[in-house]
Length: 168
Image (cartoon, rainbow, N blue to C red):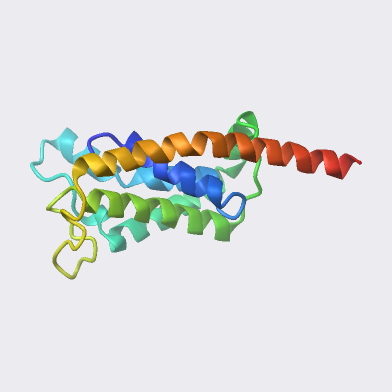
């Protein structure tokens, strides 16, 4: 996708649906970290934007590195989550799984759009390319974000309700 923020819609929706099983900041970061590759290539002026990290193998390696970073930064991320009124406990397992979900969602979404992506590399080919139009992929991402907003509000309400029950 030309702009990484489109990836945040599906990642946010997935993270909120599976909250608190998936560490929400890890899903969100995992969904955008893959675009470090095209950003680097753009800066270097290279003609191809999507190579190794836009494969499931490359995304896995990148996600595992990111999982370690997220684990080390979980106090900072926890403070950010508290600001958004969704504090969450993190474990190595839910961080790792969440980062992988985010990174894989990125690869899948981009695979619908770009011919140079080989998601199952070293196997060649892209079985996702052209299955749906690019406008449908973008619309899907936007709809996911819109649907995530009331789900976010619901998660806050649910958490408040659980806290009241605990006090009583």
